[in-house]
Length: 272
Image 1 (cartoon, one colour):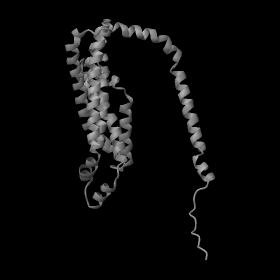
Image 2 (cartoon, one colour; image 1 turned 120 degrees about the vertical axis):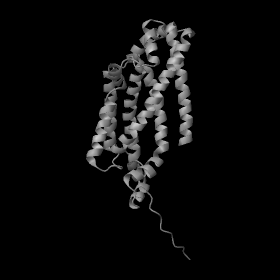
Image 3 (cartoon, one colour; image 1 turned 30 degrees about the vertical axis):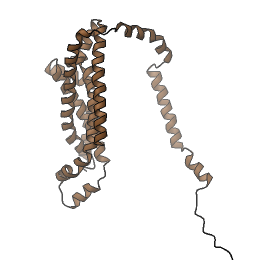
Image 4 (spheres, helix red, strand yellow; image 1 turned 135 degrees about the vertical axis):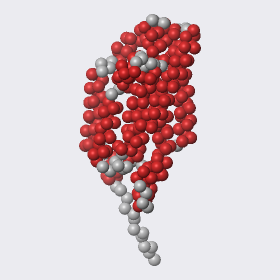
């Protein structure tokens, strides 16, 4: 009596597996291009470890002059840090309000008209190409020195940056619910309000918290050009060679940034 042998399942051979693991010529070319770009960037940027090592004593001397911190400026630093935080918060909030409709126009999954999609994307890219420091200089010349110029610069920078992020979120979403709502006769406005935005709120909120964290640091730097916040005082103290005051200001900024990062991380975990 013989047993019928079951037909063996076809399994990939060792040669097939090796072929799958062997990089294609496109991958090899891409690696070569990336390495070439990195080497070119290092040469153009004059990146050299020996220069850094030679400069370490100067760095140590600069840091040593900052100790001990002068706490006499602490009340002023805390007050100006509050102004910086306010600039970042209002700039981020208004930026989100501007970014949402901008992103909807830039998402081809929401508005299928090619001319509208390309025009919105082009306007986002043009706005993002201008650094926030340049926007701050522009608004300082328009409204004068102070936090308003910094707030307007943060608004423009945040709106363009988040519009790009939100547009990518809208384009990569699962559109089955969107299509089902369209088949049921819902208008585009209804689909945006009832389907698209509710699905994307957690992701949008998470990215907004990340942008807020970055805006706090950006607002701290905008004061260099007179756009309000703690950056103005930091620049002034550096010019006066008051390194103890500089360290106190840096500590205040560090404490706020770390606290904000912790809070944002906690909220992102709750949202996603």
